[in-house]
Structures are given as structure tokens and as C-alpha cells.
Length: 288
Image (cartoon, rainbow, N blue to C red; front, side, top):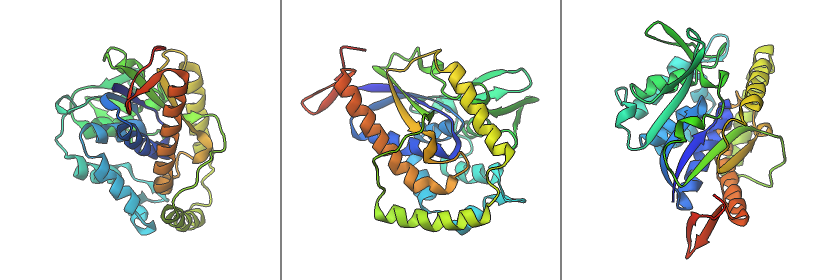
């Protein structure tokens, strides 16, 4: 069964997208098209060009000193350094229109005050523009237009995949309501996380700044206003309390949580009749 996949924005919580994609493919879904905002555009672009596994190995291998290399004074993430690494994984000249999976990265054009859908052109440039969180990462300038994070206007860009004629549209919301998850990471991941957590917390004691709180509030309000515009067939809810948008050191745990939440959502969709399982294969249910 083929799907269109919509990957929402939400900063570091977007690492959950990696585990979600892995679980969807494991369960037999074929990704026909991807639309993404912010971190969703980054993970979606990596999957669309076939390099997500390499990226996952990289972020899982990062220790504290590695993370420190991607910072700039005064202890802020440097988007240009991060995307230099991503270009090394993806390839600096990869074009969106040449990808094996149809892909759309959504950014915000501050010059013309509207959404921008990147469906052609340089893949890395599109991903960087879509994830340029105002006040955190530098904007991307293209043809004198100032481009920033797509989440400023659209956190869950379903519209770009509406015409793709996939069997199902599956969307991943990174701003879902808070809840406790009955999930425990592997011992290896837990040990890795505890070490990074201690170091990260000691270095970044002032993480709850007005800027960070404003970004979370802005994205939450924008999503609540726009989420009724288009409704996916299946929505995978990633609770906002699993990580702050800036908790990029939590990649290993968030990847595992994503895999768990995707499996949970698929099982619920089967029970509701959105998907049916026949002879070990998933098919579109009668309710779609």
C-alpha cells in the first residue's frame, strides 16, 4: 500500500520522524510522496533521496564534544555548520525534481508574506530554508527573498500531497497534547541519553528563555488555527512533552519513541477499519 507522508515541524522532536518512517516501511507501507516543514522537511528530504539511514547513524553516534562543534557563541546552534554536514551526506547538487520520491519542503517567505513550496531546485537549500527557525538560525536568501522556517505559517503541510493519489495520507503531528507513553528505551540508548542529558543541562542552564518559550507558543497557536484545513487518513501524534524543540541531544531516544508511536497508530487504524490486514499484508480499509 502506498502512502503520502506529511512530516510536521517541532524542532528536535522531529527525530521521532526517523523511527516513524522506519516502522511504516517495516509494516509494508511504500512512501509515494513526502511533504515536510522545518525538521520534517530535513528528515523528509533525507528519506526522499535515500540517505536517511546514513544521517541516523551520524546523529546516533554524536557525543557531547561532537554536538559542541555545531555551536557558535554564545552557545547557539549554528545552522550553517549543521547543513555543511548534511550536504556531505546528501550531496550539494542534488535537485528535488530528480529524487526517486516526490518531495515538497515548505518555507515562509518574509518578503512576500506567504508560504513557499519547494518542489524543484537544490534540495539542501530547500531543507535549510524550511528549517531556519527565526531568532535561532540565519534566514536563507534566494533571489532577494528572505526565507525562514515553514512552521511560521504551516506546521503540518498536508495540502502539497492532496493531489498525489496515494492510498492513504499519513501525517505526523509533533505538537500533539501531552501524555505519558508506555515506552522504555533500550538500555544502550538510555545510558547514552543519561550521559548527554547531564552534560547538556549543565552547559545550557538558561534554556527556558523568552525566545524559546515564544517559539513554542507561536508554533502551538499556528497549528491549532490551521489543523482543520485538511485532515489526513491517519495522524501519528507525537506528544509535545517528550522533548523541547531544542533538545537535539535526545536523538537516540526520540527515534525509538517514533517507532513505538507509529506502531501504536497503525494498530489503532487497523482496529478502526482504516487499514485492514490480509495474509500478513496491509490494505486500505473500507472507511477511507
